[in-house]
Length: 230
Image (cartoon, rainbow, N blue to C red; front, top):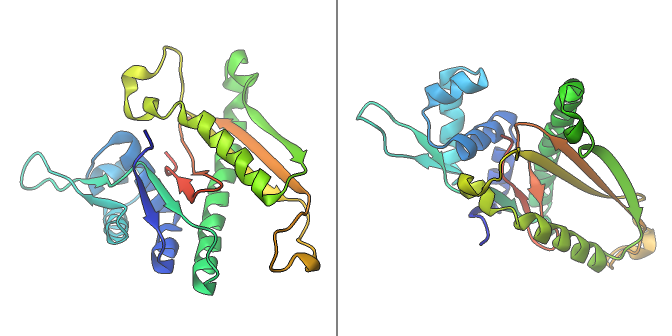
C-alpha cells in the first residue's frame, strides 16, 4: 500500500518547503509523532518561537496540523502524511524556479548527511561498512528507459514501506538507512533536442548512507517524493 503523501503544486508552497528547519521539523514529526513546538525545539537545538513560526508555515502549506493534546494547555503538531511529492514537469517559469530552489535545499541536506556519515563511518561495524558508502555507474538510456529504471528501483524500495508504519515488521538487527539516488545527465542536451526527447547519454549516480536519518526520495515517472530528513 502506498505511503500517504502531500502533493505540492503551488510555487509559493514549493518555496515555503525549501527551508532546512521546516524539512527537519517535518522529518521529526514523521519519525517521532506529534509534539509541541517546545519539544521540537529541544530535539533540534532551536528556539521555541522559531519552531513555532515554522510549524505554522508548514500548516499553511498542508504539511502539518494540530493534534489533540493531553490537556488544554498542550498544543502539539503532527505531520499530515509520511511523504511530500511534487511534479518536475511544469513549463511555468515560477514553478520551475521553485522546484529548482527546493532541489537545491534537498541537495544541501544530502551533502550534510553524507558528511555526517563519513565522520562516523570508522565507528561502524564491519558488516555495515561493507554494505554502505558511495558509488556511481554510467548508463546509456532514453528518457523512457530512465523512467522505467527508476520505477523498478522504486518498486524494490516499496517492498519495505510496511516497516515504516509498523515497527513490529522490522527484523532484529535492522537499522534505518537513507538511500539517496541522483540521476544526473552527464552532458547538456544537444541543441537539436530542444523541444524533443533528448538521447544524451546519462550518468545515473546512486549514493547510499547509513544513519539515524531517512532522507528525501524521488520517484521518476511519478512526482518527486520526500519523506523528510529525520
